Image (cartoon, rainbow, N blue to C red; front, side, top):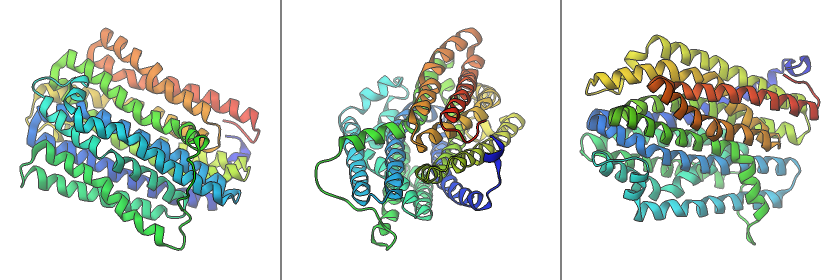
Length: 447
């Protein structure tokens, strides 16, 4: 950044730390319950259960993606309207975002009720994994409204002066999930149904924890009547699109790599990839936490036309992601064996070897992924969503899919693991160029 944007601002730095730390803690709680699911399923159902879970998880990415898209897009509009004292517009934005979330959850509910076996087959389940995959998908999709509403509420809480409550809601849901995971899977012997039922109750708990906000004096979230605003809903999608693609691309990458590993190493390969994917959930959660914590501050700066503050927020966010990325790379390079062994309850040597290779290669993507997630969210929060949309499409679809198939054909499993780092690195470089272009259009410094 330029000298003007690098000027130290202790007040902004402290605000950034408060918002991002709360956001990271809350999202890490969600990731911990995904890891808990993975560990409990691996311990009770072995390699087959782990493979079934990994085949089903992409649908969770779609649910999260839609919820985060609406939460990010709606709350960004909400903050900008509040800065302009447009109370009526704030109410319209809040109401329409909730309505859109409930409407978009309906197809998932219908599929969960009537087509989980079909969905499981589409995702690659075979005779060995079909029953467990379909069970997980059925209950995951039936609870789609709760998952989406939970993400929407959390985003609006952060922008309505209650970031602490949003964090407590995430932590409460995550803690309950971990406890119920253990209880349903081991004492109750409920298998895969126990795992997903515990997970499905987590967003319900989160929503219940956040409800008292609506009775508090600081609440400015009010439902309004009248026809839903099509423009508001489209802005939800436009501004939140990078968050959507970040999550959905993770699901698409999982589907693609599941297909590749099924071809190269069968269900054991999918289970090994499941280890990597679930550890990667933690790193992605931290980056999303940084991005979501940054967003209210950046949107407020944008509403005040404070370009220096906008870019200083980005500077803090990128430094945070790079420091965390360095720690992740060190751990996955130095201790890949013990990490893989945690999820290898059957001590399968093939699973262990593939997972260790994945830990060593896949997480080279970490610094680039962090930059991409933060930068694409920053573009949306300063009301310039198109560059973030381009980045998200590039890293989620255009680059990673052909790279995965091409590199796997050339270098087998090593090529499959390296496709994601290459795609993220290319996107990060493109994002830097887009940022420079943005700075030239709105001068206040550049990278």
